[in-house]
Image (cartoon, rainbow, N blue to C red):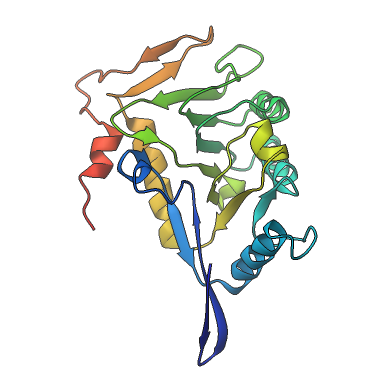
Length: 244
């Protein structure tokens, strides 16, 4: 966070990222970040840093999902909301990109959402304690992993929200240590252009047919290949081809 005194008064600029400030990993990891001068977000980040430094006690946060305070509850509510929308015949769906999925309570909520009919696509780079595509348990859940040149490190969460999608990015995986034993942050995205960019990023990863591995109902992973004249698409190469 950078605090500046400008003509309009004190203004905060914040950067919320999915990775580390490290020159070495920056060459090898795929990460995302957002820079914002949103006043409410700046106030939340200021509260967070004050709590981390011990200047103040636990705070209430408005925009930010902060573990171990409100993040588990907010994610649980978002998953349950998708199940409610699906039961009501409204657009519903969950798409997420994360490093690991291990938390039992979150996995249970995802199973219940699947049993309510919610389509769920999970791009999980590493450990995944959820079993996808099991009849009667997780039939609407698809799990895949991208293994390429770069270490996939970004976390993106998308909830269909009845046709008005909610996007979030940040540092936390769906793991017990991230939700209960660490200070982690997730930020909701409000800018339509950034939402569209995140939508495209998730879509490209889901269409990867070179370095993507799909989980089978028995827990095995099978490498995806182009089929029926499909154009080859390697997500990491696709993103690396863009220049600023």
